[in-house]
Length: 276
Image 1 (cartoon, rainbow, N blue to C red):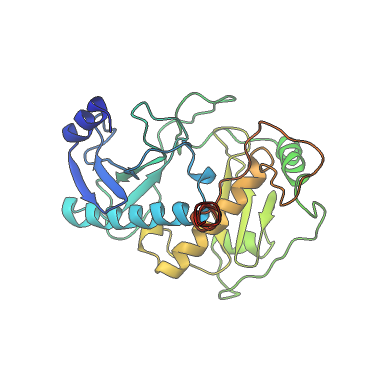
Image 2: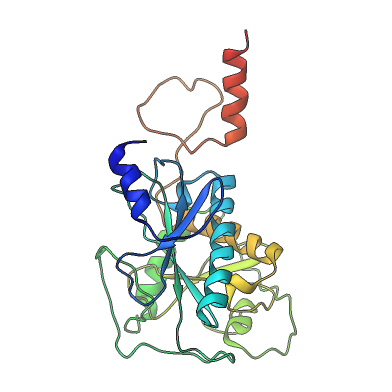
């Protein structure tokens, strides 16, 4: 570890750590008590969605623990999760921000921002503000651009709802196909659709087919894991095609990186090479 990196680590106000993960208070918080969660070791990617599956889950399970710690210690009812993919100047990898939502009551009520926001291109930050209502034709155009990359882009929607059929909530009605929607991805447990009030083109909402709390950090661990994996899969439909990977020589070589290798596969190949 370099002296500059070690010095930076000493200056952090660490609130939680394990052998692999670290959480510390943000130096320039948007609200009191924002925590940064990251891996202790250096990383090659700034995006959580480019991590191997085991590292992805490990980091987000640690983030859940930090959210519980903040809620208890700061007497807040909920925390939000924010992620902006970017390379870190300190050489460390992906980071997540856990944001305490001060002022909320125990009974959840929707809170809307006072103003709308819309950014056609990446402004260098993310926001949960709503944008102006899009036309249905514009939403359909974005939906087609996304779904064309799916294995079966014209597959009929699955309107299975794993809850009370009389539930009149907006998301249950969307899952059941009772509301106008722009569905871009789904699996047996989750549905992803474009919001008609995006603050950037393609802004997507992911919901489970069964009714769950909107406080994701208080979900049972099994439901939380399933939501994470569904988010990871849905994200792939919104970004560039996944890197190629070949078990056998395809007739050419390239300098383009493939998908991140799992720890187990690297250990297996390392053992085959070094054990002589």
